[in-house]
Length: 250
Image (tube, rainbow, N blue to C red; front, top):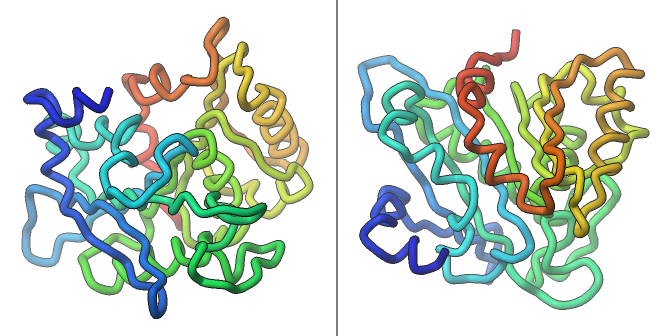
């Protein structure tokens, strides 16, 4: 797949501008930024936060584009749904709470509480809100999606800031069903493979059950016989983008 990113078929990668979010002295978060290729005076655009999985951690500001996010860069996607895309890269780090979207930045040196404050989740929120302040973002149409480790972070960010996101697409992740009531009003389309031997499918099933019990109406697609890479069929769903971009906060 790396060859695809770097070869002629991977030229779409160059649509994403390389940037760094500086959360503090020496605390940098590499990210890629895609702008809509059309604009008009006074027009505002949706914003999508894409969160990669554990296999794409690092600091090369490239690996995070390996899976899933390409769907947003396709010409037909950019024409039908012009939007801003943020694709940050989680540092690898070491230790129990480092190297995960749910942990801390390895150079931050601060603790992470149960709501993610003091860690990478808070930095992601800062990145989103800073982008909203700098660019013509439609604040009613901010979305979050992620795969595997990024799927866990997608669920966690909804609970951390349910006021911020208009919809979410968690793929092969999981969360805390006890917090389902907090996010029950956020439109969710979740995906998982029934044969996932990395993140058990029950992780998503429990979240969906929790949301429905709390009065939510999540959408759930489970792929029979598919393993951990359920992001491949998920981001190829024909109506995924139409569904997501149709959601907006009241």
